[in-house]
Image 1: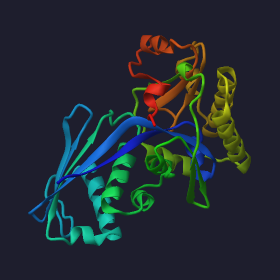
Image 2: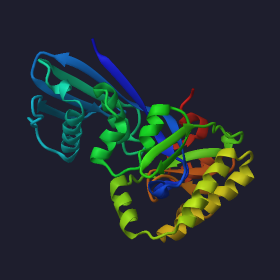
Image 3: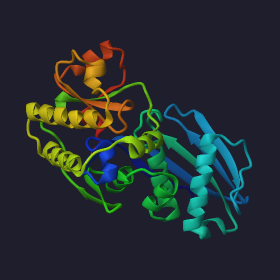
Image 4: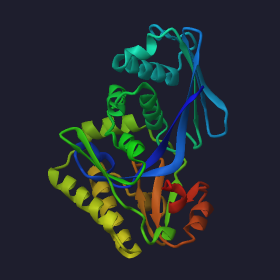
Amino acid sequence: MSLIFKSHGKLLITGEYFILKGAKALCVPTNYYQSLKVNEIDENILKWKSFDNNKNLWLQAEFLLSDLTLLTKPTNEVLFLQKLLLNIKKFNSKLFNLNIGYDIESSMNFNKEWGLGSSSTLISNLSKWAKIDPFDLLWSVSSGSGYDIASSIVNKPILYQLNNKKPEYSKIKFYPSFHENLFFIYRNNKQKTNIEIDYFNKHVLFDDNVLDKISSLTKKIIDCKNLLDFQKLIINHEKILSTSLNKKTIKEELFIDYPGEIKSLGAWGGDFILAAGPSDSNKYFEKKGFKTVIRFMDMLKKS
């Protein structure tokens, strides 16, 4: 009998890098997910296969179960998987001390370049299988904030904050009445989150006042009742990030003629952006060459 686990991807709407320093952030779960299927086998090995959204095999590996020695070619992706498995063994050694092996398949229904959480959904699924704390597993391999793990746990929009480096999060309601005017657009450029986080931690200077402003904007965005006010709020959020990172806003850089407002999401410069404007904004972005344009309610995970 197969054990099957599923975790949904996420989008960070506010907070960006400042979530690492204690700012409050809004995160929403998406319709897109990664699943993990685990079968027990009679061999003392762990067989692994990963499939992309087109059902193509993109990662394959085998490990000796006793010490997780790699039996196949080492690639960066395989070595990351091995690191995850070794840390799982530290947290739950019993899983690898049984007289059985495992045949594991991981599949996602979204493009792994989109930045919706191909790593975090994998970590969430593995933690469910191993019955360990997903935050422990995340922080054994990453310096991320953990908001993506919290999102996969709650599966609803959440308000997230690191308080003395401890995650605090709560379920909230975030279904704007003007959702027909909100679009997510993939920038055709994948950001490497850990690299961006490392740069932020080493080079970006700011004071606590910035954290307070971000937290205040997050709450106002959650409670916002109309499109015009929402646009003003994301303009303010973009200005704070632009000044702190010494980078142009995405609208200044690429979409200066867009008849609405645009906000970068997550790691600035790649992955998805959020547009708030006319209800036919998809035509504008498609004409610009951005083919992945998803309406807010099509992206958001349904209850």
